[in-house]
Length: 106
Image (cartoon, rainbow, N blue to C red):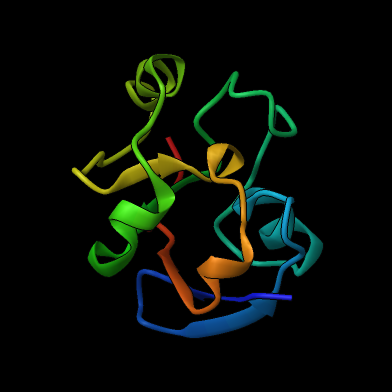
């Protein structure tokens, strides 16, 4: 079971165990990670699970789909590493994945 490290806007780290095949959003919600609201429950229909993928993990998590890019238009403070956590599928190769949560959701 890969471990994902969530880092909030103040720099506090929260490591969580995540099941391969689940999404980063599901791991965050299951483990009570603050800053991930996920109002749509993972349907890529809102931007309340917006996160920043650490630069070192950008390639491993892939590029956002066109639908995800459209939803990111509704997120607050979008950056080049912005993703919707509901769209990042966890694999065993993602052990140690670092995800930064924004100060607030849009």
